[in-house]
Image 1 (cartoon, rainbow, N blue to C red):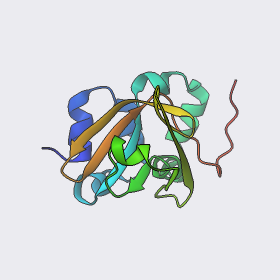
Image 2 (cartoon, rainbow, N blue to C red; image 1 turned 30 degrees about the vertical axis):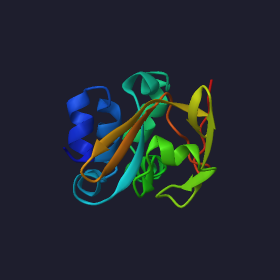
Image 3 (tube, helix red, strand yellow; image 1 turned 90 degrees about the vertical axis):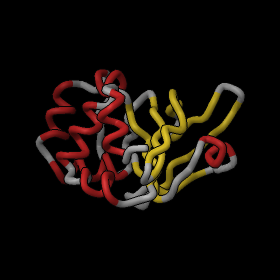
Length: 141
């Protein structure tokens, strides 16, 4: 079993998330500490974010820290754990709303598209869109 970063690297579907984690200086934490539950937007999810917005995030490590911390939750929460949760607290200290139905699990309304990638220091759930922390102003088209 591999750590969170190695697991995401091996997948090949999370290159943008890994790039932003590195910009935010969070790679060592996700390699060595934990356990963490990470809600990881796919590269396809990031492809829907306007290029100007992505350039802005890439150029601002502090903003990258805020956004990436919003995708990380202390502790190891499986999809089974999430089904019985109404909310979890992100590393940013803000709440993520969890909903579960026959159609699956959502985090702040964003569907988990692949659940339960177990890692030595946590677990990853692939999500269909990036999560936006309430402290960040994002203009969506």
